[in-house]
Length: 210
Image (cartoon, rainbow, N blue to C red; front, side):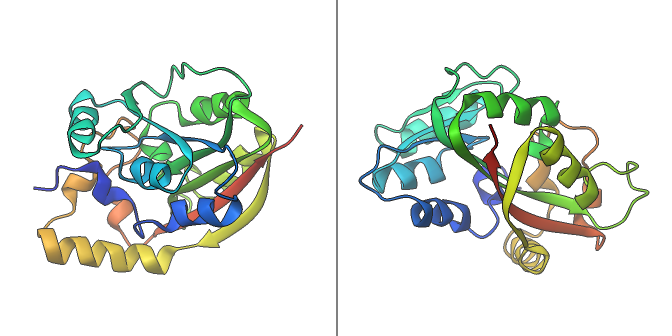
């Protein structure tokens, strides 16, 4: 059975390597990883010199991360109640975590408050390639409208659907199942439909507008 959320990071370190390319390591860059699992990306960024913090709703998984990584800054926190100062983070990271959270629209809106001026969100997630599945929810139109409504500028958008299909094949080959990928899912709108052909995957860089 697949029981670690870390495996749900498509492409391994693709997102965190985007961060490293965007910032000079000698800068004091504060990063928040929401839905961090056991903290693999947080640990990697910390080793690269970033001031990285991770949160996850699962106490069990956070405890696992603290056992696995020395001096890692991860904590149990519900993304619906983000307990951080406003204008605090340079960058917020969602690695395939936003869509499986309750109140994802509220969470993304709250993140805007936590970002410094010109702060960045790196987000990877699913999209449905056709309407008719949960109405328009989680189609590209849905995501683009959400980003605009929350006053984010889309700096870069990449369709990673091919990589997503390859990733599912790898997981199925190694573990013999896909169902464990959604264990801990808080969002009832997302279920096994993400494993159908109609599903795509994207990576987007969002910039906070004034």
